[in-house]
Image (cartoon, rainbow, N blue to C red):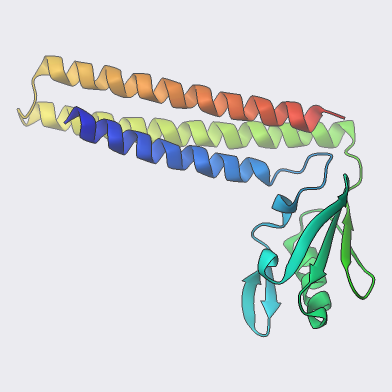
Length: 185
């Protein structure tokens, strides 16, 4: 019973951490990052296609992304997709490449981004606590159905809490690291 609960708990919480890591990678810092373009779909002959599959994305400078489309006829569609994504960046098209310059972040913008990062962290903590609640409910139900004793139930709930605390600390570390990255000029 303990191993089943621990396995399910850790599996769900790792997914939450993975999701948080993914979301944090999309938060813009002062540097150019191809992760900003994740999730943007380009209309490739009527089929929505991920940006990474229609062109090569590189960072020639610290604050610039460059997209070289595999098919030059897609330049307009790529540009349109970036603008439609409304991520606060404007592409520049020179006929062969699309360049995206990332302006330096102002202090106010950095503070807003830190708020967003904290909110993402808080959402992840809520998700982790929901997983804890679900697992504790299973333990209590097992105790109620006389599958396990009261002592075993308490031990299982303590173990669930320890695992939850570890994952909450992990979320805090991720959020703190991203805050530091955003506030670094």
